[in-house]
Image (tube, rainbow over all chains, first blue to last red; front, side):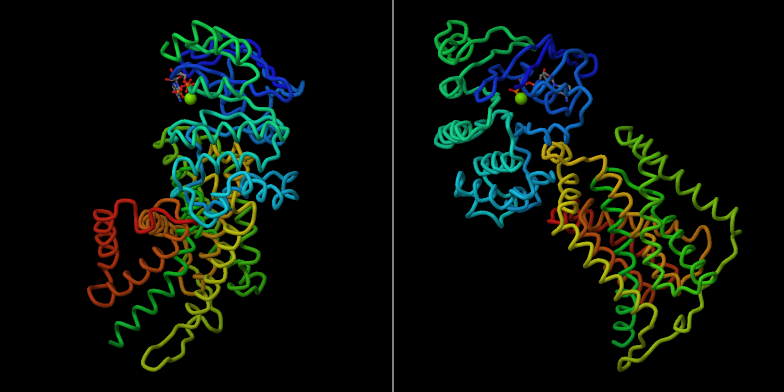
Length: 234
Length: 288
Ligand SMILES: Nc1ncnc2c1ncn2[C@@H]1O[C@H](COP(=O)(O)OP(=O)(O)OP(=O)(O)O)[C@@H](O)[C@H]1O
Ligand SMILES: [Mg+2]
């Protein structure tokens, strides 16, 4: 479904991605693991066309994303829930959700999708009139995911959804991701919470200083010595 | 007391037009993070447009806004697409130079085409007024204020209730996040500049019956709009609305009680004082 091949990327003179190749198949949950600064977010930004790679190709359902703008990628059914949640702070919860159905093809489903988000996250329903900027971190994460779902995505990129959440919330978020996947959305997840993310993933990649150093099924990587040493402190 | 009420009223009435000018500037800033130093010259273009519609086409200046808004919207949109868009990621000083340059080109072009003669629009109501108890109310100012209020109401409706309006606000609040939600932010920049230019020009049309019209008339409005926008919180439409009325009232009261020569000084002193105590402006954060 998503195919990244030999992706190079530099911020100015500083090259941060070196020949990244990875692939996500329809229906999967694929996780990209990596320490701070490994290049996980940069990879997702390339996919969402917020930045342009210096080399390599990205295709989605066989279509080359090379010439497209960010908003056109969303129209194709590829959405990103960015790191730091990036809620519109001066908009209410409801308005934030509405922004998720900005593209024309999703507007007819707006009401149904809002209800779906409220079912998935009852807390959002209680807070619908509250400004996004005043929500707690966990609530903002729910809103960011809910807003992303409003675009009717076939593939959802999630950048560190568990970052900064309380342990209880973290468990909840991974359950939700699994549920969203069950309902038919393919997931590319970027995480540092190795245990929880590998547990729900079909496959995973490990990124180190801008290179893919390992890949395998979730179970394989959970048992891998290198992963244990680098991430699980064992 | 009469003097106070009289100047307060005149100030608030003219402040409506200031608000419209400030709102235009703040929308442009919000979406592109560029301060349009040509903004006052767009007000000037609105005044000239109304002048010619009046003298050549016999169109009342208040009615003329239905032509002036689309005309200057288009002008602003084209300006954005052709030049302003090129400096979106440039250094701030280059952006400032560009918009100042646009302003100079506009005022000098008008001077070349139409000389620097002062022109006036003399409608039947231009110097009309009526009494409200002890206070005299200027008819053209009152009319202009009422229309301003209506235009502002439509703008708020647009920004709060329509998908495009929401997208403009979203782009202003987080450009990347807006893109990730499928918003074409380039298009929003064009739209915002068009709306900003249209609003400035409409304000120009609305004050045209009470002002001398000449190529340099716009420049003081640029500075005023800048003060209003900073006062209201950069990017806040609500802040600019209130800020505009506030500046109008302050100016008018200062003119009556201190001296009309010093009224600008009073405005700037007040501006600096507010910034000292509320650096984010009076409405640092608001929905619109
Ligand atoms: N806007 C930027 N300009 C310059 N360098 C950047 C920029 N953003 C990221 N970098 C650098 O690129 C490298 C990869 O960053 P990236 O954000 O992709 O890492 P990450 O894996 O997402 O890390 P984290 O887990 O901290 O989010 C880092 O060395 C970072 O310092
Ligand atoms: Mg990151």
